[in-house]
Image 1 (tube, rainbow, N blue to C red):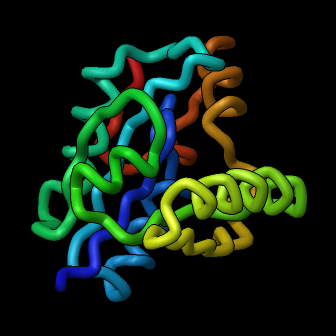
Image 2 (image 1 turned 180 degrees about the horizontal axis):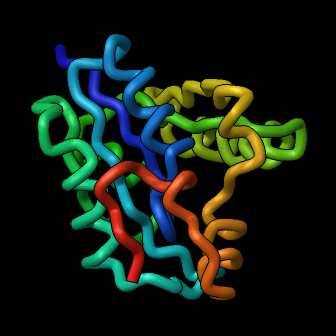
Length: 153
């Protein structure tokens, strides 16, 4: 059976921290699906089609990485894609508390789906999509926070 992981998020925008997480997880899984979720609690800043294009561009040379969008629960998306793992990054202790609650809820819904936590690299810990968006809104250069080749517009 293939080891398929889903890496869910809004990716608004996709950052070097996200990219690093996926690249570091590649040896662990046969396939990683970067799943851009539509979160009813968040309004997107960048158009979903742009975000998907940026992610596809970032992993154009990685045959084991695919990109999809979804609505609803991550565990339902995992079931549709036969993925048994959810990959999540942790930057801070606050992330751990938040992600742990979600992982426990996911486990109660789908016991055969496991959440795998990976720590971000220290240099990526302060980078978040929301901070990148804020800096971008004020016209500052965000190129060091997003994967090479992506130009935010």
